[in-house]
Image (cartoon, rainbow, N blue to C red):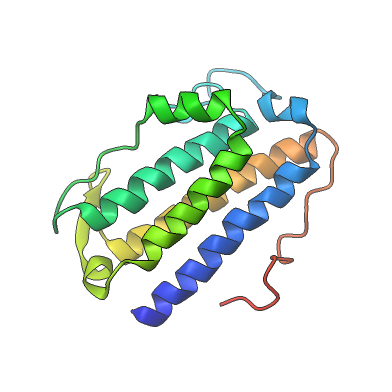
Length: 173
């Protein structure tokens, strides 16, 4: 599992850093912009107005929760849905992009401390059983899903999105 975990670490780090390329192309006012607002434009009960800034904060809160909980919980534990209104408000009030990158660096340090036993542990999230390694890939997919949302917003504002396969690292996993 060590090779798979190393591959995950490299790809996860790159997609987070690469996400900045999308944000760099947006004008500041677009970060709080919601181009489409209707009853279906929300993610569950937690995100009711989808803005780019809100998506980035949503990703950071989720990743902070998961990175800490996955390692700390007992085998077979149920991981709660990420909720941290204090962190959300703190990020929204400050420079959320600086905070997001600082959090990502902390997350990468925490992830690098995971052991083989941590990765093999089974947890439950939203009524499904996962190995921690499997859930880390789900966390990666969650980020990729929301990067697609951000990409759509960028294109709706007539801005060309970055080329997805031009990751910052020249060699990927």
